[in-house]
Image 1 (tube, rainbow, N blue to C red):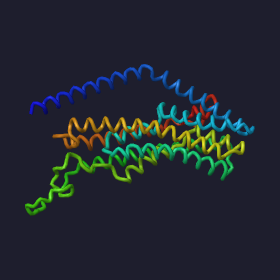
Image 2: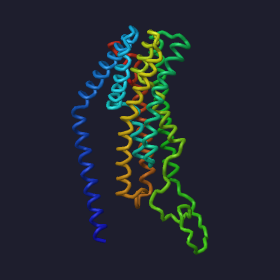
Image 3: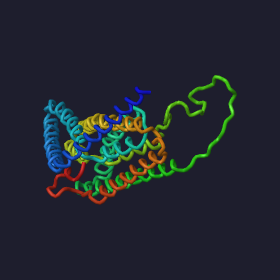
Image 4: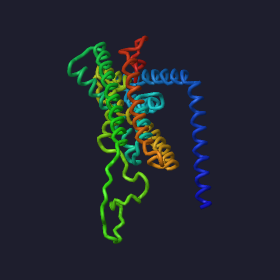
Length: 317
């Protein structure tokens, strides 16, 4: 009994320390947020211009530029994941309000990031190659695509709210009479196999997360594809974009695992079902859905076709 009390005290002390560290980090980040955003954007623009230079080297048959193109694209993807973006917000919101397995916490951001690269390739080759649109028309088309992706994110937020409201409904209690035999197994229905067992997300919700992440192509990837298409080295542009998506995927996977660990640690401290507060988990799902809808609204209202200085990458990536 004394050991359990000490364990609870240690857990509570650890939780308090984590909360204090989180708020301290949030205050430091808030104080330097504008400088951090400016650094991320400036570094991405510099890397993007290096990628264009490597494409020009490939066009001049300097094949060492191909190796540097892939290396630069990978680090561009990593840097893109470090900066603010819609994919990280979606993954963080979903994993912090839903119980997921470790495999799903890895695959969801990984597949979503790779789908972002695929959507950029489809965007360029359907519009630029298929319909032969000019650069200005492509910029306006990207604007419409980002508007549509914002609506998709809002729709996914509404889906999370609906799932949370369904969880708040009282469930019917059914009684099953079983003989007094030693048939106590994981499917016996007695409810004594740990709290929240089998409460993982379904494939429809996971597919919605992946689609919401991948539906918005990166502006930097689009410009690399357009430039490589103009030079006639499309395969190198596609390889650079998918390498870029791989760098983003590996970085967001680390974030998703950290969010899952924090969520499960909090659930272990307070109980997976919220202890005496059965409405807590559904309320968190509803709050997460509302946050996604608010984020989608901001994204819908602030997206611009091209930046003021004419740099496509600054228009949103």
